[in-house]
Length: 492
Image (cartoon, rainbow, N blue to C red; front, side, top):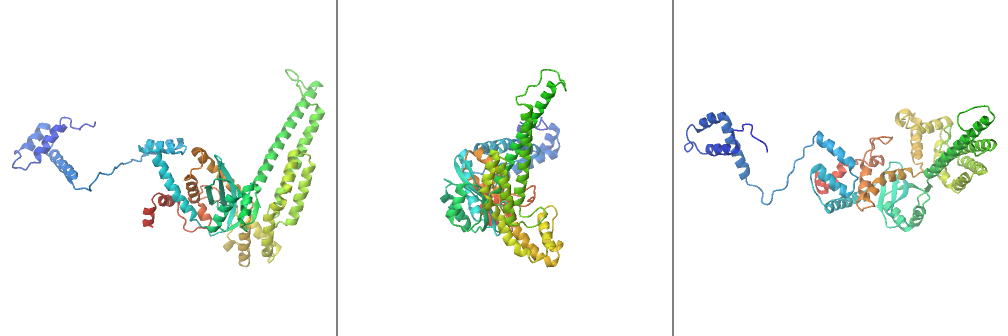
């Protein structure tokens, strides 16, 4: 307990002095204040201050108030120690309901039940779902669709490939064509205008689009094909390095046996003769070289622009890929042949975005000479490294053509890599909650669409603003409206 600075002037003495000084002067003994000041070695001013403090306390306690129990009030001091404590506690919590309960107790000293927290999250999730369904995007959607599963419960993720905006993130009971078809139709009815839709080889995703009977071009996912080729490249590299190490060991053992070199210890033992090891080394290196060359040719043939900045011709690209596939099959490697067979079945689909681009862009560039057309394509290709403003950097006669060409090039789309990246961000949340609670995914979708990217080419922008939504609210504003919808509506 705190002590008075003047220990000899204890509480009982102060009460006696205050009670005496509150009496009117005729009833209070004359000279009593001076006598107390001399007795306790204090000033008369301190005694009058005690009287005034007592009067203020009485007035505060006797002032009329609202009837009923007084609301609980608590103050929180946010200082350096509290911030450090919050940083440590937040780093240790996983985000589950019980961790939220523990965090409230450790940080704020507030005890709430699991049911209260679950009910709060449920209400917030319902508000977030309503806001997500009211979302409209003015620009065409470069759709990317993919499935994610947690606890045998599927969820169809639909992302805009231009802005990284999440259009759908709702768990479903099954992943059949009817369920996903209804989801596609719901997005279209909400005003989403799809330019195309890229997805992997999932049968439910493609079957749902066919059952919905939507006139949306379906693009095969180039991301998984590149991922498979990179994995195959790493396996062939490891096989080549193993063959090189085996052949080098066989050479050293042969030189040691012929007395050319000497070494301490036992002689090297080899399981493969030198001639066989050298032949396998040559074969493994040649296989890797041929694979790398043919893979790079296929990759370049799928690009919208050639190495020298010209628009790719679909016929020539198709011939290049077919020739590369035939040469891959001649390498007589089972994994390479399987990759070539899979690529053979998808050639026409992989070239469909390039064919669309050539069909749309060829008439636009036909109005220009080769030099100006090459400049416009070069400027678009290096638009990130060398920011080019059409209104200032391009001559007046070329501006309208450049804008049209760049708009067409901006709609070139053939991958679902953003949907895969979003799943990497979602996975820790799903694992922390051991499933897909009804409130979780709507809140995550609302959070993602309003947050600002911290780095990369989208730094400082939110997915909503990149999608063309004007006056998009910030994350703090949308959370205030989510948690206090009535107060936010009145403020607006």
